[in-house]
Image (tube, rainbow, N blue to C red):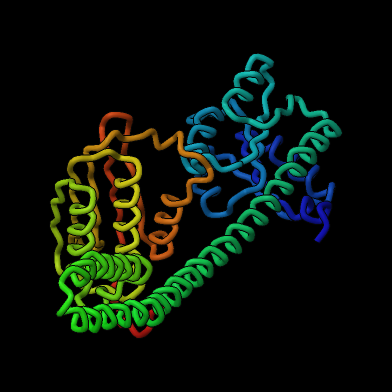
Length: 365
């Protein structure tokens, strides 16, 4: 459909307490080729009508008994909450024109009507409105495409992490196991040479450290504990490990909650990313983590007493928080972050229990 046809099919409402003005404007618009023209002389009905029909243009008389046009525009603003709703005001009072434009009107038509001027102003406003609608549609389509792509990338990323974790476990794990066996053999052969055998102890210790690091990396890449121990114990282990490494106090409070695989992983990654941020930036001495049942949601709270930051000053290249938020929104959850310099950081997230609790076999990570 061309723009011209879109404009002709625009949904228009005329609001005027004078029947003569209603009939004149309606006939003018119909003769100009507009096919969807409605009219009312009751200003108190305008917001309800707009809620039902989502008008592309409202021609609004300013001076009406009971409720003037300015009050109607205030009601439309509250109804649309920032949406683009074109209003052209109809007035015989020159002093009302500037006030109406400041109140949000897109244009004005003077009374008595100059029909050519009225048609021109109406067409111009509708042309912008139709272009805006097309832009809104394009943005919705692109947003849906980006959301689908982001979901796919999360799946791919988790798959790649799982593959890398398996390779580390199988390949590197095998090499380290062989090295441990060889050290044990050397220790047996060198029993008669204590001066040489003593040098095996540091090597054995280094191998143990390598095995511990390998296990930690694998758990970071793919938390196998979720399937073995469940979400609660896995989060406890994560908090303990981070607290020990960073030498900070960890306070945890976890309810036993059954989630599907995707729900468990989303909460685990949320806590993991938050603790990563604490370790990198917060300079905190205490962290509190809670995962609680608060029907109809599971609520996750993470607080630290670190240096804090200004959330509005985050760089566009900072993807950690955006990734956390998208993961949760994909499950119809939410994420809010409250922080300011010198006052620590408070993170509050939710996942709807009705969506998260399901048969784990139906989930695809």
